[in-house]
Length: 332
Image 1: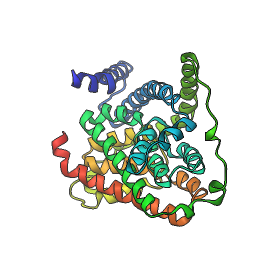
Image 2: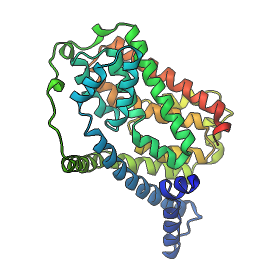
Image 3: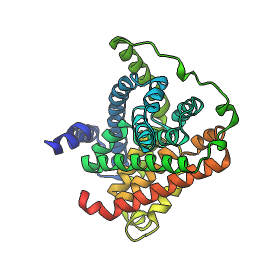
Image 4: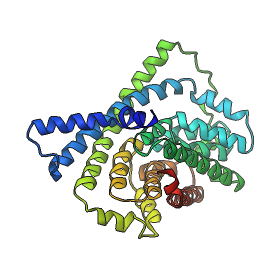
């Protein structure tokens, strides 16, 4: 039953077969590189789009219960590492990319929440949202998807705790520390219809923002899947290269995409022999440390804190990557 859900419900293997049959009927040779690329592109774009819309609606409906002011009050009830854990968990029901998380992070910081808690939120929000769990299940299976989310939360909690212990509050931009955040304003209660309307609006808004990256990601995935020799991928990201995790992490940092854009690339790399931990490190780096988000974050925090944040994330991602590579045989 679990295999059926993973392959046919989440993975939509039936859709791949249907597209293959349709292309064959139209005279396209799906065993050729061009035909295989077309099949991969159509299948992944449709699959990810369907999952994207369903996931955004469901997660946005949940998110409507946790506006910034309510999230701040929830996090304000906890202290120490418990507060970091709550901050990381709240990050799982918030925006899908790092750039969208930063304004909320700024609001939390200006509202007086501990700096470490806000950074736990900032790390977990793009890295381990609920959408990533379902999408990863569709490709890697339940065990790997759950472990990925758990490790992402661990990075967020440890990262926030380290930043808290370093007492770097003076590294936050003055305009944030001196501002009064609007998160103290009580949000009106929403009806079920209001939440559904909000969720629908989020679907449309988020889809418009991420769909170009889906097309780019699937296009890259199709090229990797059908045109790049397996030996090349194995040489760079396989077991023969002990620095594959570090390379994948550093390559992922300057890129900009969310989990929906990185999934097809990860899928193609996996099929070509790249190691599991190496792939997951690449995904974490892209979603958490994208260059545009770092540029935005630089306006909110000073260079010393920004450098510390980047170093903690990179170190955590690399450790997770090597850890996954070491135990990958237990997860297959």
